[in-house]
Length: 114
Length: 110
Image 1 (cartoon, rainbow over the protein chains, first blue to last red):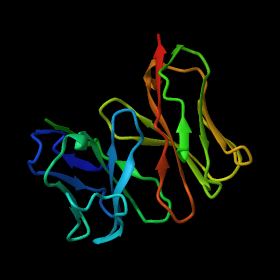
Image 2: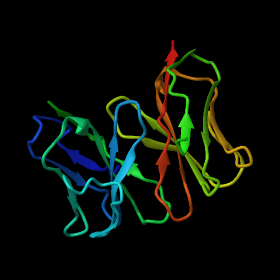
Image 3: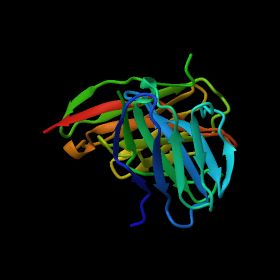
Image 4: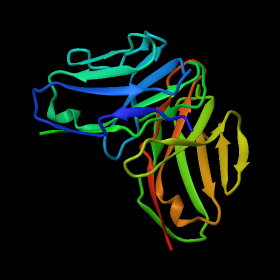
């Protein structure tokens, strides 16, 4: 069964360091999402891609976060510099199209900033 | 007021019980309503998706939407220990991003 892949699964870093997360969506899925989920809360959208284009990054803290999906397939989310408040689960999801279709989530990357 | 509210629990029930999970929302533009299940250390997975008011049944799960009251529910019949997870309600307008509730933690005790 096709799945969304994410790596690493866990990342521990010190504040002010740079971190990067990778996501490989389900093959053929044009839309890719990055969410942040703080413990005890629901996922919050950081950025949405349609193919290689950003269609919504209104909640992405652009002073420290960046995301790219260069060939419209896999994607990287970067934080530089990391802050204590960035500790959270970072989830990647994909769907066939941007209009509502089921979003398939990856296992997430658990980030701890010390 | 948050757009989507959900009792965080934790909710603990004996095996075989009927479970009722609920969300309220404030944005009357929401048209699509979903329930996701999230096991510990895993990503959410879609359980139920509804568009209109009324009930939708899938096996032991029933999703109920009352747009006039801005209230949605998920019922789980004959609950099993494998149902122990966090349940997230989610909703979307016809053109906007999905908004998730904070989730309710459920434990089904054998």
